[in-house]
Length: 132
Figure 1 (cartoon, rainbow, N blue to C red):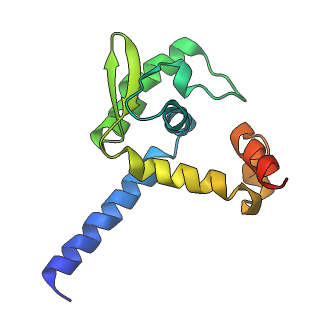
Figure 2 (cartoon, rainbow, N blue to C red):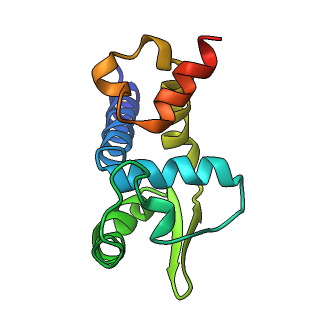
Figure 3 (tube, rainbow, N blue to C red):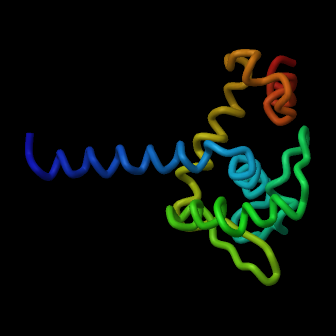
């Protein structure tokens, strides 16, 4: 095994780890979904774009968490860009890395275990539409 191949393997592992870390928290997943719906180059308003439609959090608390935790994590990996005034976000240069995982989950909602679908409006809707 060459050193170059080993280094490439390490980089890929690190990228996958960052993708799953980014998608680990609901506000970050919701923001990715909202950005997918918004389209390339379109900013979305925060904190609304990161709010769960099934369990809406306290707007002020979410805004603080976004500003200090979620957005810096997403921006450090290039998944989003954001600004504080006005408080908004848009797709970053590496957005596709997280978007593809969310898209594949939505496209395969029919085979995802029920325990991961029911209660998630987006996946419920995708499952229903694809079963027609």
